[in-house]
View 1 (tube, rainbow, N blue to C red):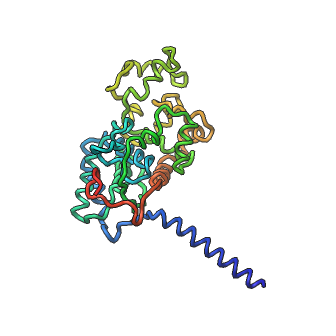
View 2: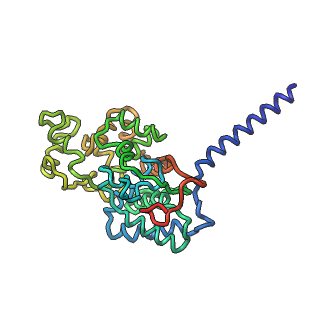
View 3: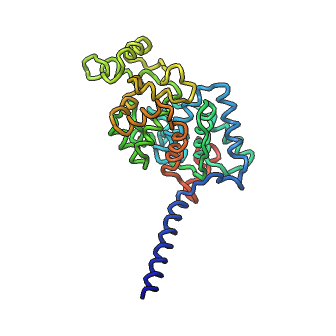
Length: 326
């Protein structure tokens, strides 16, 4: 009897291990996925990215953001890259995506890969690799990117509007948005640090300067001196001017973003929101010390984000051109 129980327990444990492995394999991503089918894939992508970013470093931030905007809408399936058609408005034409740039970098990498290993490397993987390489080229961390994603065939403008977190989000809205993608509050605090790179249009934050509660007032959570400084650059209804998100350091990937947030100088309401939650506030404060973990954490959270809703195995396709379904 005892032996039978032991055998039953062993069978159950083996079944559990098999189930866990199945779940892991269903995700289907692994480091070096193209080792046998296209050994130079990552090198080819890096070379293409470097050829553009070395000439135009300002492309690094929108390329990082492009991967984020891809993953938050239908998962990391390259759907943000697809063009609209006569019968469908695609994600890239949604308002939050109109400021994305660098599609030509992805296409250049894809063209080079198609010459070397046709029909093998997905556009979704190119996007994940380019985001890593862009950060690394701006003196940021370098991390191993699990690959094996396949490309989606669907891209809808409304999905982008429904899923992308807005710069006006409160901490509760941000936490809900990230949790819906299986991402933690720490991932939220870490990935917000991507705002260390790049520029923003005034229109993404002028409500904080001029008419925050409808009484011609500024957002009280923003440093009044910073409000005054921003008002000299951004007039009400200004839709064209751009400013640095991390002034003086917008082309270097560093912890300065967290210093700004701690001084109430984060540009967006979503930046200021990090100080309104104990977990995210603690993370901000940790980055101001010699024990800063941001560089290491960023790679971990990017891998977590890069796992969201991926298509693997026989799902989706490998596009020949990243802006068109096959």
